[in-house]
Image (tube, rainbow, N blue to C red; front, side, top):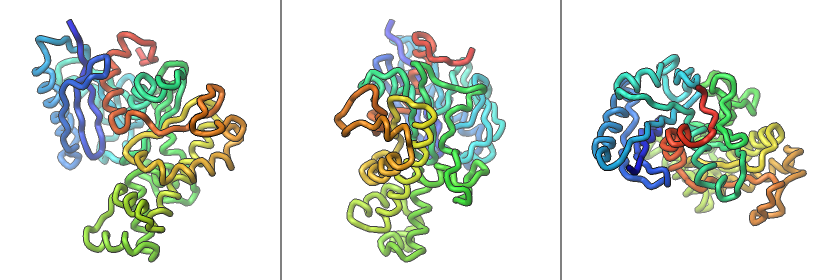
Length: 339
C-alpha cells in the first residue's frame, strides 16, 4: 500500500497542515490562522482537528506513516517540552508533544521548525542539488530559526536546543529581544524586525513613503518595505542593507565555527535576497577569515571545497515539508532523532 505522512508547521501567524508522500507529492493541505490569543490548548485542538480531517480523507487507500510537527524553539527533545518561546507568550514549559498526543490519540514526532526546514532542504532542496552531507540553514520569518545537518544527521545538541543562532547577540546594547537578550540576529533579520526598522526609519524622517503607509495603516509589512526598496526608496533600501549586515555578522561566526560546505537562507524574507545579499557578502568577506579562504569565485562555482551561501530552493514550503518527512526519516534514514 502506498503511504503518506502528515506534517504540521506551527507558526506564530499561521498553522499549516499537509499530507505528503515520500516523494514529496502534496496530497491534501489546510492553512488556518494560529489563534495565539485563544491560548495554547485551542491551538493544539485546531491542529489535531485538521490532522484528523486530512487523515480521514486519505485513509483506506493510503497508509499513514506518522505525524511530524515543526515547532518554534527552544524545545527539549525528545520530550517536546517548550522553553520560553519569544513569539508565543504563555507557552513556556508547555508539554507540546504530550498534549498533541492526548488530543490526537496517536504518537507524533516533534522537531524544531528550523531543523525540519533544514532536513527538507537537505533531502529535497539545495543539499540534494549540491550533493553535500552537511549544511546550516537560517530561516527568516516572524523570527529567525536555525537548523544544522551534520554528516546527514540533524544536530540536536545535548537537549535538542542546538541551532539558536537567531538569538545570538550581535549588538551589545541593541534592540531588546523576546528571548530576554539584546541585539539578537532576530531583531535585525526577521520580518518583524524589518517592520520595526522601517518604522524607525520613517520616524527619523528618512522615508516619506514609509511614513505615509504608517500614517494610513498603522503598520508596514516586510513585503511592502521590499516593494518600496525595489522602487528606489532609499530608506527602505537601508533597512534591507541592515538585514544584510547582521546576517553577514551571524554567518561569519557560523562559517568560522562550523566550516560546512553549504549555508542556506530560507523563510519568507529570503524572497528579498537581492536586497540584502550584496551587503551580507561584503560583511562575510570582511569579517570571516574562513570565508575569505574558501569563498567561491562566483555564484556558478560549485567547487565542493568552497563555502557556498545560497537562498533556499524550497521557499516557504521547507518547514512544512520537513515536518512531513520526519516519520519517513525516522523509519528510513539515520537522522539522529533522540531515542
